[in-house]
Image 1 (cartoon, rainbow, N blue to C red):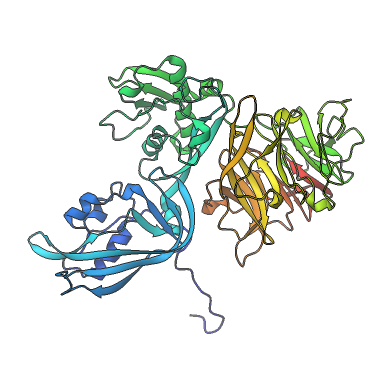
Image 2 (cartoon, rainbow, N blue to C red; image 1 turned 90 degrees about the horizontal axis):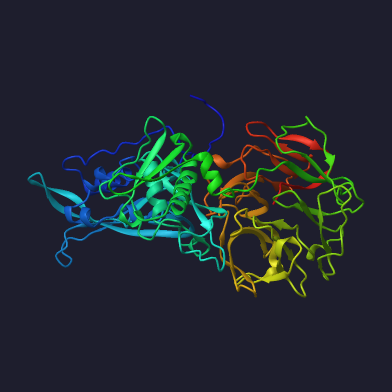
Length: 588
């Protein structure tokens, strides 16, 4: 034992160990009420598929009415059960009452959707004497709603998975189930990772998109489509083919619609990388095949399920000219080359840059932040008059860096105090639309990043001297008179006190730079639903000012830091690319 040294606090909720499995124990005979409550709470953290062991701590009536699948309440630490009072003699109640307390950080609803929270949590649990095996035992007759557990147990038990739906197109008949397939949108949910995640995920996909995303996506599955009655589990055969028996709702779909349905299943199961499933066969209730689809053909059905693979990484050099590196590079193996077009080979210097997702065009903001230009990425190409002009007096109040979405539209914010606006340029050079931002003052927008799917947007918002990440839903309407609204803004990184830089990094993931309360700057991944998996923290880097990521996680991260332009290939440390440079960017 050491005889000197300081004392260090140890967190009650330790970092989860994904290899640990928890098995619940039944209540001990003649167990007291304290032991029953604690045993029940521990059973909620087990890998028991149906929570059968947890139900043994409940009365028979309570077990019938308790539905753990309806909600999961996540607390910063495990729930603290506090005995309130004995109820003997009060209205004939001879039971015991406990209050569960804690700080709630999230809820997972019956759609498996994660919703951040920041509130005190209290819920009453009541026990009474019940007849068990011929004698009286303490049992819970009023359990908490759903499941209550600590954040570390949640991270151990649950895993994020993306369901995939098709982006709705205004006026395209998006709800008819047979519209032309387009860009697919990732809908993140959480499933229990050791309790048949394949079946859970397919059921969640068939249930339809989560409430937040539903207004801007469609599913090709007919309404009411579910797994065939009696199907308990789905498992691939020895050829890695997954057969999915459906109910009668899907029996009469045509081949084109069926293949869109199968594409949704294929892309959804790709996130469950351990399954190895490469083919999906949808079946009628009688077991006959509706259609079959493999990974390669799924790409043909929905070729835009993610952004196009980036050919290059882009940034501005010390002379504010656009340069690029091969997208698959892994460090200093290639020198940056001037990009073709007026922003690279030409003489037009820029302060901020964005490259379209097809890498045919570039958008740049002038050195003083006043003007937005768009030019082709072709040798000899020229640029015309500025498409936007900010009249703000201060450079800090002018145009933000632009961002291209997956539909080829260009987004930028003008922070002019006299007329703050979030703007969309149709197809990059077309009509300029003022975007409605209900509940958000446009002058507070510090950065704009549109997602590849074209239906979500990430905004860096400054208010009261603090920058936070907000995720909004892009709603388009109006036909010949288009109108665009950013709806239902929600926090993208609530666990961080401040976010200073961000970039999309996949279907539902972002990489952010910021700090937690009382902490130092860190770079980490977060989900767009506001959750932050424990594995998301990345190696540290000095003074990160900007960050960029590709939707393909095999490509390196890019950053502008105190060390210049740096990048981090998968599994490797940060490496310096250029000692002086700014505005790192992938297409988008």
